[in-house]
Length: 138
Length: 129
Image 1 (spheres, one colour):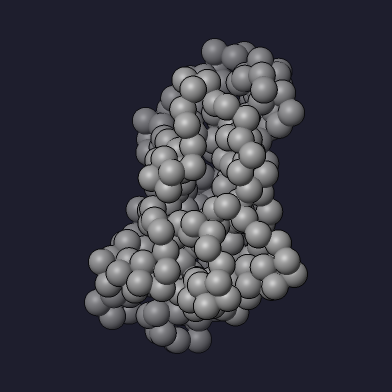
Image 2 (cartoon, rainbow over the protein chains, first blue to last red):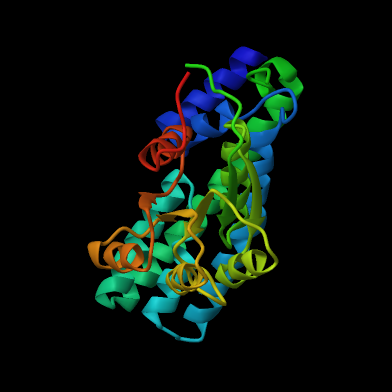
């Protein structure tokens, strides 16, 4: 089971869904906070939909206040999602509304995929037990 | 490298819950007692209440009172804490304006243990053991 968890984690890195920041978060886990990474991911998926929704509403209104859109977008992280954020922000910078719309649709897809993959990963990691979840003692 | 117990205190100023959690935990891991506030106004208010910190980690983009205004206000109040700006935006113009507001250091997000240690060393806070 732990091998399966490790393989899934590796594949998330290989596919570009995770980067070194995930490892940094894992390094912060200890016996006192054995699920720290999952808690941060949960916070992220609680917070990021609000930002995505704000952008969605602004774009639906046809409001291309590029500074405001850029401001919402800069908070949305996570590796592959971040790539789309970067592209969106570049389109904002040059005032390309069509580019913004296109990259935003792609961002929403990547965000949904990431959520699904991480949900699956953390579910397995929990089943695998505390050896995988808690990486170090304090 | 082992990390020594620290008697330092820090204030995390960031409107993003994920960043708040991560920076709080990073500081905890280095044994640095820390508080978290959500915007520049709260950072000013907490100092007006009499609290003081050795280090302030100041996110650049925040609502209500942004980082540049908050940093200027703190310096005008005579706050001599070391202030390190953190941001995902890194163009030179923004960085210059932020530094000129009164920062001691500047780092791009995401903060990591090594970046935080680098800040502490640069600001003459921390000795490696």
